Image (cartoon, rainbow, N blue to C red; front, side):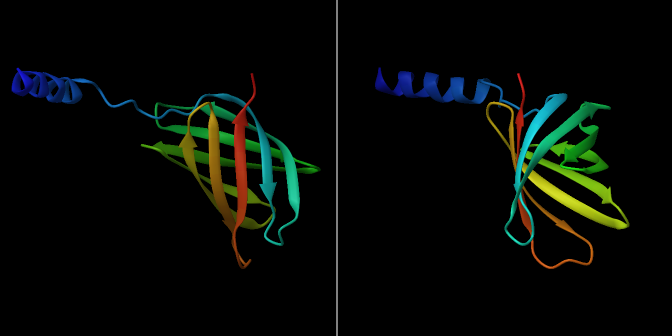
Length: 120
């Protein structure tokens, strides 16, 4: 009996589909740290352009930047332009509409952090 139960449980584990991570279109609350460690906040709006690609616009303080983004498994990456510089942010997709990321920008040392939380 144990052998049959183990076999049945193992078969069910393979039969259940893996839950794919997703990123939702909408407005997100931004909480981040700059390269110097100072905090910033604002909003980011994600507009889906396909199942794996999107456009993103950040508004933090008086600054607005735009970019393109892409989802691959639980990684979500965005390239963006800020003034004359090009930046890159890589987020880990977490449960509950949260994106937890690290970013950098050309010509600067270090990395900042950023967390996006989907607004209701």
